[in-house]
Amino acid sequence: MATHKVGGEVDALCTRCKLTLAHTILAMVGTKIARVRCNTCGGDHAYRAAPGVTDRPSSSSTTRTARTSSSGSSATPKAEKVIISFDEQLAGKDVASARQYSPKETFQVDEVIRHPTFGTGFVTAVRGDKVDITFRTDTKTLVHGRGGPPAEKPAFSPPTARATGPADKPLPAEPAPGSGADGEAPAPGGD
Image (cartoon, rainbow, N blue to C red; front, top):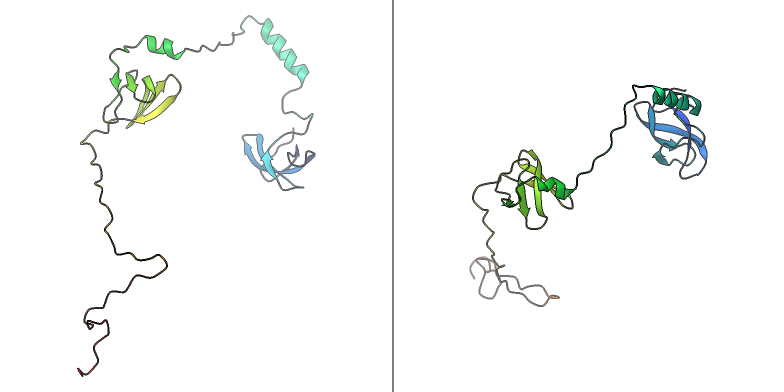
């Protein structure tokens, strides 16, 4: 198998051209090519090997290995996934003493809480001032332990009334200090 590196070239299936063409390698994850740029159209995309090319061992060696491991007595059975429903997880907890959620309260792992929007849930993780709480529909990250006095609500202050005129005419200018009563500046020399 050829050794590839970033900046090198490889034949790959171009998603834009729909052909197997030369591509420049842009990114690799370990020894596997992750992203490439088509040298023909310039499009960047995830690497797709040319049809018929694979990085897995040939099928004859795979079947031989599978037969060998299945005939051996030391074969370990594959672990089966076990999915526990929300109700089963909640069954072992004291739901009757669930506290109402508040960002001011502090919660512990496995504690049951009632949230006004998400309903009943239980704490699965505590990270500083944040908790992960599993509800029936989703797991949410919420804040906790933000005690102290409640924040004051800002007081409403309406804007001050200004004299307004028609929108298409400018407002009259206010007379400057030291000007005469009719809005004209006093004549120099006092006459």
